[in-house]
Image (cartoon, rainbow, N blue to C red; front, side):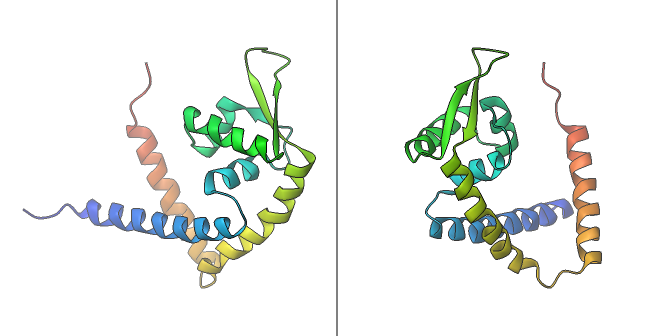
Length: 148
């Protein structure tokens, strides 16, 4: 049976994602955080904070896992939970002053480190990659089952 053409591309896309994730995760560990902890700090950096729901959507971390990660960041003094004024049932997660300082200390150097993998890319290469990934995302979004 002949292998479907798209499977080769999907595998290559997955391999690229995993390779980049390995590069990023390895560097984040040298900074003293786990990748999900870094993801939360990076997402909350320079914001007024956000609800668990919004944080989960932006980081793609499931709610059950997110709670434990926020617990550990809270123990480190990097985040704080406060009640949402508009909806007292909802909690807002914010960086503390120490958390914002950690974000400022770690985010830029991490971006520079990860950028090394793309040093051979020109503006045209990035534009072509963006076009193809946007096209793929559009097709995937269009075929995604609608909730409800």
